[in-house]
Every structure is written in structure tokens, then in C-alpha cells.
Amino acid sequence: MNRIARFVAVGGAGFLVDAGVLAILLHVTPIDPFTARLCSIAVALVATWQLNRHLTFGASSRPVAVEGARYGGVGITTSVVNYCAYALLVWAVPALPPLAALAFGSLVAMLFSYLGYSRLVFDR
Image (cartoon, rainbow, N blue to C red; front, side, top):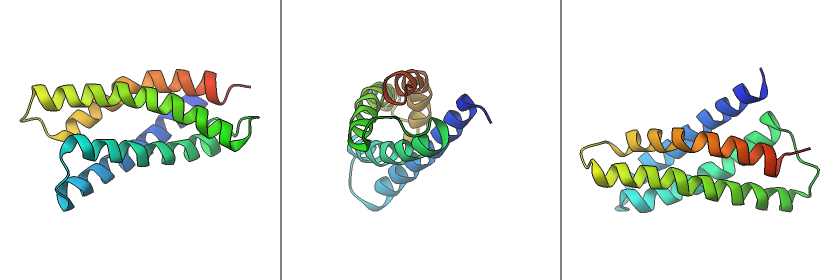
């Protein structure tokens, strides 16, 4: 499997983590969809860092803390893109299920995250 296919697979796993945490928070807590999404993004970001590190790109030549900080920086930036697309849809189309807005936001952010991770975090 090539690197882009592995990245998409890891992204799919990250999406499932994100969606699962979001669904759980929305069903078992009184947290609103906006706050719940912030929590689910954070959990998914940690999961995808580890998966991308081990399955997609391999560990970088940087110390783990530096790699993690760089991954977090790119991840937070792309998560802002993802969250803005999500929030805009939830706000503009109140009847749209939050998980559908999550899927749209995730697709929008995928290109940004691949470019950032491949060039700024795991570059060789």
C-alpha cells in the first residue's frame, strides 16, 4: 500500500475515533455539539499522530517531543479548518446531523493535513 493510501486509511481511523467520541459525548453528556467537537478532535489528533508515525510516514529524525509538537501544530491548524467547516454547517443547516457536518469538515481538511504532515513533520 502506498503512502497516500495509508494516509487515507489512517484518516479513516481518525475519523472513526473523532465520530465515536463526538457521538458518545453528545449522547451521554449535556455538552453542546461545538464543545463536544473540540474534545473529539483532540482525541483523534493523538490517535492519528501515533498511527501516521507508525504506519504512514515512519518516525521522523527529530526527538519525539519535537515531532509531537510539530504534528500538533499542523494538526491544530488543519483542525481549525475542519472545525470551521463543521461549525458553519451546524450553524447554517440546523437540521443537518452533526456527524454529516463532521464528515464534510474532515474531507476539507484532509489535503491540508497531508501536505503539512509530509512536509513539516515527517520530512526526511
